[in-house]
Length: 414
Image 1 (cartoon, rainbow, N blue to C red):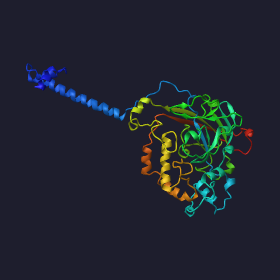
Image 2 (cartoon, rainbow, N blue to C red):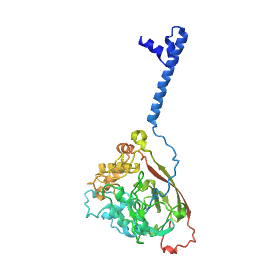
Image 3 (spheres, helix red, strand yellow):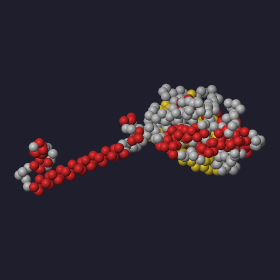
Image 4 (tube, one colour):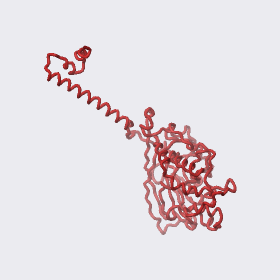
């Protein structure tokens, strides 16, 4: 009775004719079948759009507003000499010395490190990092001319040493470690101020930008303008006569451009730079940002993390690259109970690997691409706010007749 009353009084088009006794069976059947088909199609479309929303809940579009180069830092630039050790400093190491054993690791040579498993460091300065600092090429030796924008500057005011997976390197415009790391950090040297101008480290993040108000001179620096004359110009000295061993097939440099709150992996991502060439790099920048409304969508659905949603052990700010680096560090810490010198100190009471751990590290390298590490890296989603720099570089040989006496003699130029 209730169904008949519903069919007679419903406002759904055509459905009230199903119970109309004055219409023949064919006409009533037509309205019933039409309603059933329409109802099924409505359910299908609702499920389709629900699945579509769940699979792609985020709309990606081009921002109609431009971003000023004054609002983002100039890329962090790192140079590493492929020569891992200065010949005059290491060629006379006795073959039975610990320095000689470490040198074999630095030069990627086959060596039996098992006899050093019980080695005890002689002092707090008896470390892998200290060996690299003492026997690698310093920034004072590598960088002989520097210019940022229209002004020539002392290289020590622009670059500082940093220990990376390619050894001792020189970095420009990286955010101060105080703003980057949570725990202890190996701080080789801060920027100098030879001209009496104090350059103050400041905080910068993807989402908040620069702190306000900004001091007159600060880093990470912003770009001074567009074009070659307003960029960074450096002359590098390869010290070819001091070449001893390389992480690649010969002498040269590696360069990497990245944003200032990332920690670089220059061994895999670095751009090789030939000696005797002038290399120019054009930088294309991609900025990814997200609206606050995306916070209501689960990270797994939107496939990105806001910086305060995923806390890292050592880094203050989340980026995908920093997250993956911590995954690699966890593996080495678990496998060898120590951390390679260039990786983050994710556990406060852990120690950096040294001579007694090198045999374990060699074994660990063969298992680094394991399932546990892969699963860890799968959890490292991209950041919802990110800046990526894509270098487009080209090189031309220096003319043989060029006179470089203004830089002094005995240099091999890049």
